Length: 176
Image 1 (cartoon, rainbow, N blue to C red):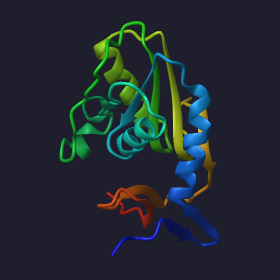
Image 2 (image 1 turned 180 degrees about the horizontal axis):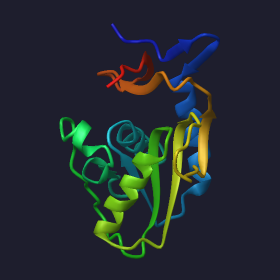
Image 3 (image 1 turned 135 degrees about the vertical axis):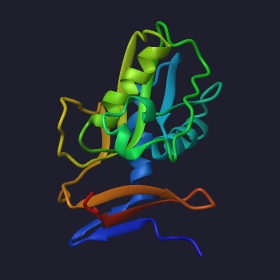
């Protein structure tokens, strides 16, 4: 049985599949012929793969991990860390980072550090499925399919079913 794509908290309902359609439409004008899609592992990676196919992009999308540059590495560790794969030359590249949920900005900071370990791109932009506010760093998306406000005690996480359908999980954050 597939999970529904709609998650709710209070009066807020988020349909991941509908928001993906908004993301696809919003990302298309940001892409030039030489722009490389790079998904942030894991939800952003799923989105980048699907966008790459739906928008009929050449080559393969990249995937980038924030694991090695996180400021909470000691707490999180490498449990689910995937490797960074950038199937293009980073120096001078036009890169569109794709992520599922933008919250504090710390993942984006870590990803930028990882990206610059591979070279110096000409331009890096960011597109996200959901911007939930709550920034701790000065980071902004060039495109967000939705902007929502959730209490800090809630987490918003993208999930992908075996058939590729996207959905959200909204959970209570467990104190450390």
